[in-house]
Length: 144
Ligand SMILES: [Zn+2]
Image 1 (spheres, protein in one colour):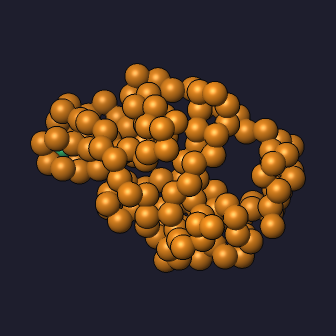
Image 2: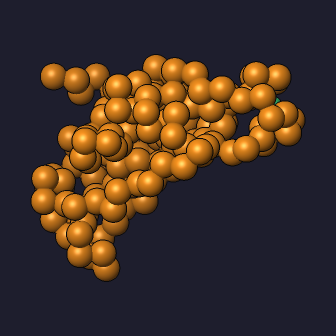
């Protein structure tokens, strides 16, 4: 299984659009941007709704359960910071509560061979430092 403990990730830098997402993640809450006009969820955040172009957007909490929509297995160590985790699975997740809003993450706490389209996953939170907590995923029901 991938050893993520030795990986030093690049740290995301929140901006005016993404700050609420990161603030929620720090509290252990997955919150995605939702259009208050048409109800469409979108991720990553934008200035306007990608469905109806309304500027009236808000972040709403979602349960963080969903299915793998797509995945890729990283075998190369081109970025040496990730060498201890190779091979590992990078996944795209479609959340039950926010259809259409696809989230990227890694599949943690499971062999990379467990990444399959349609597999059920749930969000987990990986603290990167005092300010940034990264939403990640593990197989659903894996909570110990
Ligand atoms: Zn909309």
